[in-house]
Image (spheres, helix red, strand yellow):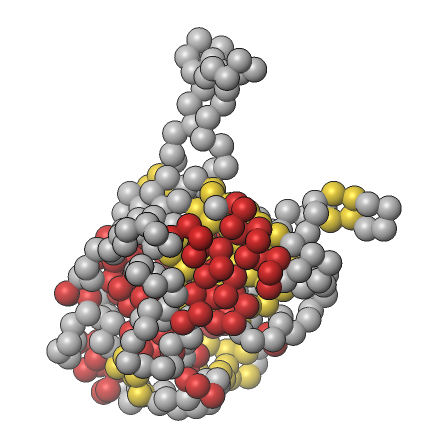
Length: 356
């Protein structure tokens, strides 16, 4: 995993490039950190110092990867993936503000489709749909708390402050994001809602290679620190099935993560591009692996070309293909029928009555 990550990352973002590439992989259900790759050498030379551990640092946002948190919050409210919204482009929020001004977002060209279901809006990455959906939730509290439960940590602005400010940009992924947090949050979906704290340590051995004992004489164990049902299994499994449509071949060419696909495997994922294109991201997972990619300049704002479906998904594919190829396909659990509802839900009827 580590060697494949190193090679894939440096193939797209070479050593010495002003853009930093970060690839981080976590095992769902245990939190074991399987790889942490960067196109940097940590430490100092005569010319420069790299003193920040980029896989854990929170610097740039990861864009539309955060739409998954809004979708999870909606599913927890009983709003199904078939929930349909017609949103103008540009869309002006009725709930959130940009200082003293209305908060307005635009759909990028390929996602300028006014009427969509939640499922379509996820794999097409519609900004306008998800701002309208966040309007219907009435507050960012649901998405923020889901993100926390899935494994995200917010330090530049605390989670409580995000909720208190009712920051409408949350669903668009403007918050400084740790690549390790992102990989771990998506690992929670891969593990049917079980969140584990990430750890690179699986055992502590003495110099003879035997388990090291603590003061009580018992071996020092490194047991997984996991929280079952951090999100409901039905919510996690339903999102996994939806996010497969962002990666795997299908009838809709508007998917954004197709470059990540490894033939013969079920792969779910989500692309992201931050405001101004200052970072691109891709978070992808199978039932056995979860990994994130972020590409950005850690020292200044620099536009990264191509979006998360380009560099992000390409690095993910190149890192995971050597690991997955030749292995049997492991399927995701099925979606919860109650959360995919093809018939009108109360939320659908209410949205139409509200003019959404």
